[in-house]
Image (cartoon, rainbow over all chains, first blue to last red; front, side, top):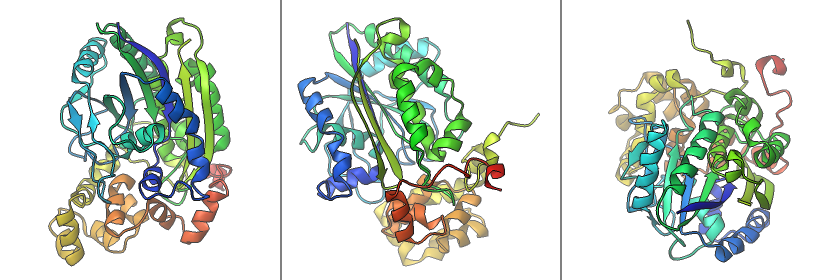
Length: 284
Length: 129
């Protein structure tokens, strides 16, 4: 059977992608950000997954206001890298895993999560920046990726509880797949940031570090935090953090296993407008 | 019975909910059209004429022409859509975000390097007073 071996959490700030693509990683402003991922790149090389299930959000790229799916799973064979207005990022196209993705869609929908199934989707920085942070600048990404897009643009976004429970259903789906695949689940976005209005630039280190603590040790309690707390404390765009709860809900301790091992934890302010947070948890 | 919108008292913040989205539909769809290079070129060649092709309100058009992102957001715009205007103008996301705060580009950048805007006094309108 397939199994989820570990989960990775990271911010997906577009300026990080731009810094990589334009060779600015050694500048003093960016050095501390990329240093925080050195362990992670080596770890991913040493522990290559067969598939990455990547939870992210589209930023008015593939989905305009014509359609706003709350949860969308990509079941395509491949995904083009989007032009978000500055030209497409110079990174490899994303190869999908249609068989596993379709299997997960069927299982999760039968578990009462009404996913939208997407067979054509250009992927934006929400998906490609985490891959760049974890893989560097390869000519091809190391394995197939299943993109899982969550609406966090138009309010109301799904609740933390809903996301956490969805993670449980995703793990159940993966474990019922009849091939011995090593699957990682990544939750991306956040941490505190606000990109709009006179309150733009909001950062809350106390909230963010408390979120990391609870994500590790009290995910069930953290899932109960209401939207308004994210908006007030972590900024209007900080609400992206609910996506981390999908990945966390897919870890085996939530249904009675041993607590996961914390392999890496990193936090840095700022990257452009945003606090960067990053965690790697491995199932015990 | 009305909907619960506790986020209305967060200062300096407009939550892009269903009501804002309805109000800003054509403004945001205009922004979306700037994802295509040929549309960016046409917009740059004649902004007013390009805007007049869209079923936008006069206020929305004026807000875009003035590049006043706070006004665009009040008229139903969402920052991820409005960012396409900034991209067309060659602006970074930090320049766009900073433009809404009343700070200079340098002041805003320095605030971020110093750890960002504090949440203290910024949680709610009551907090602010």
